[in-house]
Image (cartoon, rainbow, N blue to C red):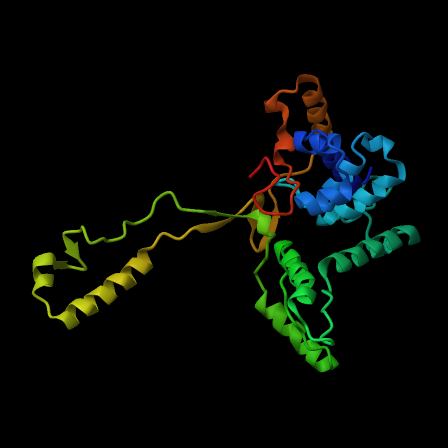
Length: 300
């Protein structure tokens, strides 16, 4: 079974064990309603639609989940990006490109094309004739927000000439070198555990001056000291740090925190079915099913 199908199968079965998703199905809620009513992502809406069926019973419907997989909000710590196909010879060694068969070359070409389509989105800009108004602009703004939440960087590039386009691409490559964007749901702001104390009016000394000396200053001197205090307070202020959930950095690359182990997950789900113990809900606890940050997730 290809890696992408392994992931889709395991995640599908894990979602089927989420109590909130089961309750939604029992209430008669199906895929489309789950999306607009709860903000659940497409993959999870598909689970609600086919909940009574196991992965093996889905038949051709498996293709729906394979299509949704790369753009789903992945379980914390795991990647859902399409896996690059690998081909081995009869000795188990990885084939070089020159040794690939026509079918294998086509599979590699299809993979590259799929990645291109996943990497670029074209928002539909509303027509300005008739004049753009709040009603017509709202869907466009929602689409832009959705792309931003998914980790896309929104830019405009001049494509009127090949020269302008070339220079635009060069600027983007330079500007984004060493930088990565993240899904909104993957960012958690956390205050540092230790931080320097910010001086207050209750301190005996303020920027080296005693209160007795300050009381003898002129109004202009006290105003200048107040500005200096404000500047120092702002410099010493405790700012929350952005932490990326479930990711690890290796040089300039950002990778999934955990390695996907298909057989271990299958055993884990079987164990949970037998015991129903909270400690056996390893993967289920890492699932996120709502596109709105902070909602619909046991991990948040």
